[in-house]
Amino acid sequence: MFNLIMRNFDWNDSNAYMPLERMFAYTDPEIAAQFQQDSQPSLDRLASLPCLFLREGRQDEVCRVGSIVRPRMVNGEIRFGYTLDADVPPLTNKLVWDNRARFDMPEDFEFSRNHWAVKELDLYQFLLGNIRPRRQRPSVFQIAEHEAIEQQLVSVMMPFDAGFANVYAAIQQAAVHTGLLCRRADEIWEAPGIIQDVVNLIDRARIVVCDCTNRNPNVFYEAGIAHTLGREVIIITQSENDVPFDLRHLRHIRYLDNHEGHNDLTRALQARMQTILGH
Image (tube, rainbow, N blue to C red):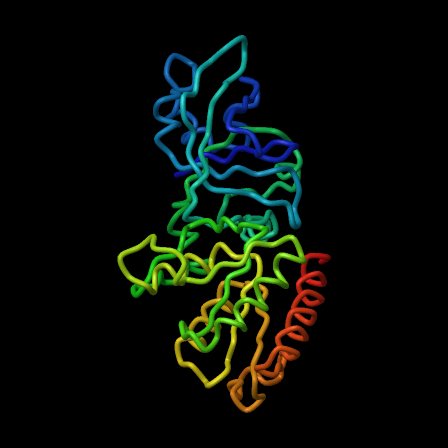
C-alpha cells in the first residue's frame, strides 16, 4: 500500500498540509478503516507507508516518491513534513494516468482535486517494472550523487610534460582573459589516487580542454569521461591525425607549437570559451 497525496501546486517545500475532510478521499472504505482509530486517521500507520506526491493534472506534471514525516493534526487539518526519495527519479502524471487502473484511480476527477488517498498497489514494485533503473555506479572512481559545477573553472587534460608548459600557459591566458580559472590535475592533491583527482576536476569544471597531441591515452580516457559527464569539451591538437577517429567529426582547434602558434591558440580558445559562457 502507499499514500497518494494530490494538491494543486508543486512539491517544492518540506512542509505541507491537507484538510481533514479530504483524508481518505478516493480510498476503498475497507482500506481506509485499516488506517483509522476512533474515527480519526492513524497518523503513525500512515507515515509508515511510502507516498506518491502529485500535482493536479494528467500530463507532464512532475510527481515524486518519498515519505511523510512528523504528521500531526492541527485545527481540522493534517500538517506534515516530507522527504523525497533521491533514488527514485522524478515521474510524470502521465505515467500514473496511463496506469490509472493499477493505481485504482478510475475517476478522472481524482486527478484534479486536492486529497489524501491510500492505495493498495505495491508502489516500489510497480516502479521497478516501469521506470529505468539507475545506472551502475563506476567502480574505478567515484562521482558525486549530485553535480556541483564551479562555473569559473576550466580543467585541462594534457600530458604532464615540461614540453607542454608553454601550451598550458597559452590555455591559462585564454582562461584569464575570459574571467575563468584554469587548473590541471597535477596542481591538486585531494585523493590518494591520481584518477580520482582527475575525475573530480572534470566533474567540477564548466569547461574541459583536452589536448590530443601525440595521442596520449590518458587524455583520450579523460575526454571520454568529460563527454560522459556532459561537460563542454574543447579539443585542441598540434596534428589533426592525433584526434581519435570517433572524435574527428567534432570541431577542434589546431595549433603550432611556437610563440606565434601559442598566441593564436590563446585567441581561439578565448573566443570558444566566450561562446560557451554565452549559452
